[in-house]
Image (tube, rainbow, N blue to C red):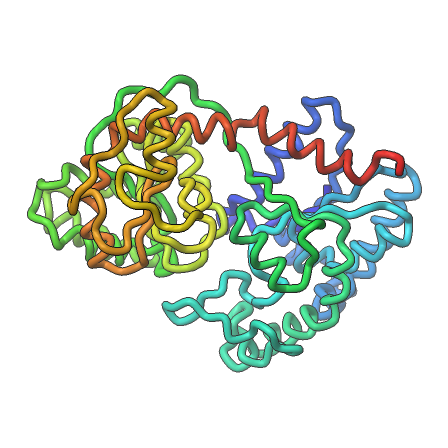
Length: 420
């Protein structure tokens, strides 16, 4: 399991998921050899090692030597790669192949194409580097670490390793949106498997609380300003309480909204117990991302607790709530079918149920990333929360439960290691 850990000062869901994955595989009887580096190591590196840092995203010599020794000594069946930057380099794929070891990579972002990895710049979605041999716009706009020099290095890395990525034996796409991204990049569909992450089962859902919960970084791409704009379009108290949890550069906006309105409560940064309590106190969880968010873990946590989700129709959010399908009229389609399976009547039809742009899914709703659309969807979600509570939990049990995800994970390994 190869992964370059992000700095501990920068909270990373990817670090958490890698740790969780290693634990789940080990518990299932798989021998896992962690091949881990951390960006926290960089300040304490000797000068000779720091001198090589500028080229490490392209070729990290120390990492290749260490990996070669590990592969020679242990002869693992598979190398599973997560984040290679900056201390591992995509070159680990070539090193593994040189030793006859197949490579699986879980794709957590869009960094095969985008230097920043998120297709988002200056407050809007940006895909200026798609289809370019060299990502020149990323250099011009200093997209990697706000440095032209480092952005140029990352652009060169992406160009050099285009063939490396296309040689990976199997890609794990966390959602259907990531699968589409990889296909667009030129990866054959037969080498892509959609397998999301799992979150631990919190147990039987508690009765729904009231109002809405937003839990994410308070940054422009996560859309808390979009949500507050939409919320202000309703009278105070008409939708219950909006609870906001998290921290970031837009915290002053949230604090101002909480001071202005009695129906906005700022919870600050929460620990695990605090997150669960906030989810259980609410009826609907909101994911208002303004970028193609890959896999917001809070959505899976919401579904596990039987809370439907109202999200923007970007990135992996439609997949997570079961809305990555063509639009269906109210009273039909995935939401209605899931409700029927769970013993509930379908959501009511009518103008309140389907404002313009709203798509219903198995476990929630998605809307365009627009304040008017989100504002129109808020009362719909509040009214429909009880109907989609059981289908939300069912979607978690069928798609995101650790037992289900682990079986799919092991099947991916087996497809590469069984005799042909």
